[in-house]
Image 1 (cartoon, rainbow, N blue to C red):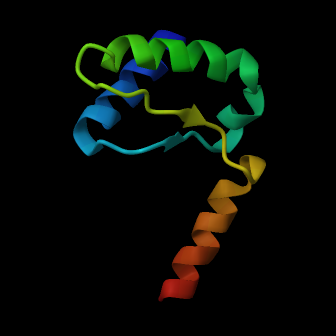
Image 2: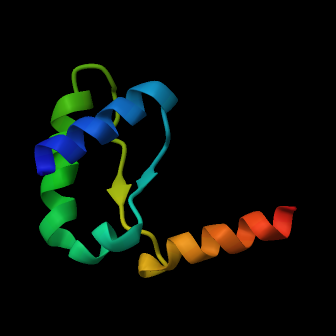
Length: 77
């Protein structure tokens, strides 16, 4: 699972060149058991092409990101 998620995130990093990747939803509840190995996998994938590491982190609001995003979208309309 780490390799697939790392490949997906690595592809997004190549496409969008973000400063940080925030992985929200229920996956964020896995904590360091997921994010440590995932960060190492992503670093290994992008390392030859990027001169910097792109942090992959859980959101500061836990798994409520979907609700917060939906509320923000409604507010914009």
